Length: 294
Image 1 (cartoon, rainbow, N blue to C red):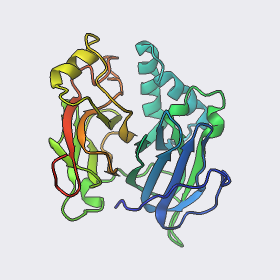
Image 2: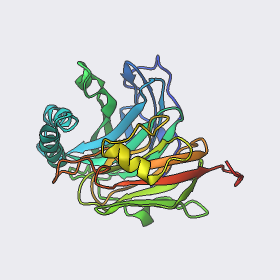
Image 3: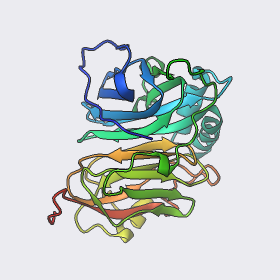
Image 4: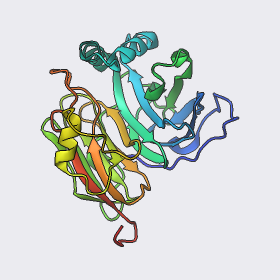
């Protein structure tokens, strides 16, 4: 199951704030980085991310595979986020071998909460926005997940949470599914209501909601991603950062009602092209929580 709510932690709080009760991690991101607790309990884990950085924040949770050192993963992650498709694809494939990606929250003008499931072991919190910073390695925060009293420590990656294992709000949450053929999503989502994001594609993937100019069409998105049209977005992304295949997470964000594009900025690790360029993009409406017309 996945549950919890995160509140921002003070900018002046120490980088290692001790154990966080109840499987919650509260994170505020600033231009100089973020702080986080160093220990949480196994089971449902919720990350709430708030950004005081104008560039926003993309805070993800990863678990190194056995035998992989953090330095190796960070080197490959920098390659994966390179602008050269050849470098980024090679880096992305290496990252897939280095870590299990459990998702996390992309937040900009509003906070975002993402809930997932973790087993005991050693993890790391990474703000992918910091990858080009000279002190990037120093900004990564270790996170130890401890089990119930008497439970053995697991050295294996966390099992992939199935949608049925996540918290089931009432009414049932909307579901966004990433597949190798594109996103499967409702046309309308309610602001502030939980959305279950499931990665059924064959590689790591993300789900980002970005506001667009009123009246934006699918043809406008096609033109932008093909390089023949203008920039349709009016603000940065809110959503779930990359998750490994077969993982799921619950996203909650009180986005302003309006028109949005659901996109991924991840590259296809076979073709080298951005998945959004290959059609992985959809238009959705965010409707007010009270059901009124935005």
